[in-house]
Every structure is written in C-alpha cells, then in structure tokens.
Length: 176
Image (cartoon, rainbow, N blue to C red; front, side, top):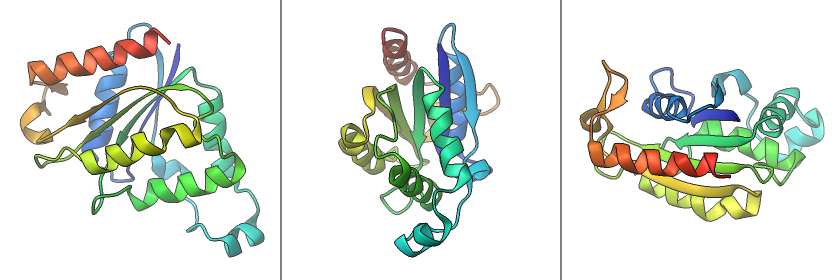
C-alpha cells in the first residue's frame, strides 16, 4: 500500500508532523511518503489570482500525489479553531482544479495540540467536510496535550490508551 502522509501545517517544528510521521510508520507493509506543505506553497487563493495564474503546477502536483496513493493520513494543526492558512490555501487551489480533492482514498484524520483540546475543533471541521471532497474517512483521532502524551526523544506515544486508539484507527487503512 502506498500511504501518503502529511501535517496540515507549514511549521518546521510541527507537532502534527511528528504525530503523522510516527503514525505512518505504524502502518504495516506501507510504502510511506511524508509530504511537507512548504513544498507546495502558493500565492493566496482568490478568483482574481485564479484568472491570472490558472491552475498552478504545485496544486496539480499535490493532487497527483493523492492520486498516486492508496490511502491518506493527515494530522490537522489548529490555528484559532480552524485550519492553518497554509493548508487551507493549498486546499482551496486544489479544490478549484478537482473538487474531489481526496479522490475517494481511504483516509485517517488526526489532530494534536499542546493543550487539552487536541485540536478537536479543526478535526471536527475536517471530518464534517470530508464527504464533500470525497474522502473515504475510516477513522479519526485527536491527541490532547501532545507534549505530555508523546515522547519526543523516543518519537512515540507514551499514553497506552491513545496508542491503542491510534493502532485501531490505522488498522482500518489496511482493511480498505
């Protein structure tokens, strides 16, 4: 299985990238590609820019990465209760090229934050919109208090309950 994984963040120190990279490594037998959103940076979307620029090559390349995968794993960063600007902008460009952004791929959505909410607001939003953009959402998991529940030195979850929930969610990708 070709698994495409990325954090919906452009932070070089993204805890969501740490989480999604760790989670991707737990998917047995997967050939994993972890993307960096910084490699797909585009001008802010607007209809004026779309008329001027057309369909940017980087947005097409991102959609092709999804097309070439068998499953998708995303960890959503929460900025002021919503998507990061970097992800939302890339998503907006992609949705103008192909409204079926997720291309019916089996997906697991994750989120995390340093606080007790675990970026649950953005995860709820992503889950709600997933069917409209043809994500075959198999499971989701919010990881609260990332710095308490993730051992940065070992690069692994230290909370056994969250580890089990993550493994259960990821197992649904293999069943897809």
